[in-house]
Length: 217
Image (spheres, rainbow, N blue to C red):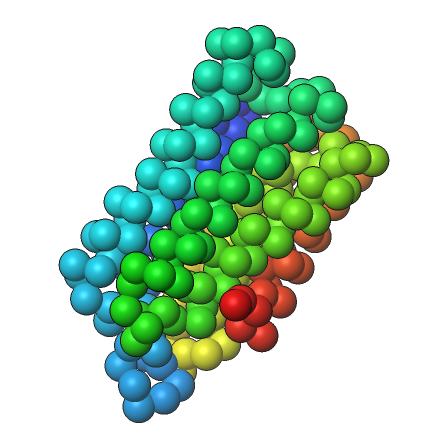
């Protein structure tokens, strides 16, 4: 069981969750609750999807991952799991910076008609999750794994409410996977039940509210 839960923690690492969220938004067939086709991200031009996968993949996966490795090699953090609460401060700031760059890219580089509210508020909402998590981390080491996977769930639920036809079955699968991730963090003693629940609430709540009410600038 230990090897299984370790695999779950690595495969569903928070760094992968932004791309998972993009994949769900772009590839899940939906029909928008409007006459404008692009109100469903499924119908976005394939060229735009490819560019966003590449750019956001670099800024939210490869750059943070490489930075964390560099910090580990230079003994700025004692482990890649960031087990010590005090060691999370610099990675929090650095990763938030990368997400701010990703958001600026969306605002500046993609055409305005492709700046879908769900897409924009998803990325902006992740920045808010990091800010809230940073503040909470000053007092308790919440689970970022739980915040990440349940954040995608919150985003997907809010987005589906804007679509006439949506893939709610996938949301149920994702909630099941989220429960598996949360269980793995508790089983591996990486977090307590309290820390895991706080992560779940922060991720789901912040991203649901952000996407539901189109919170972005």
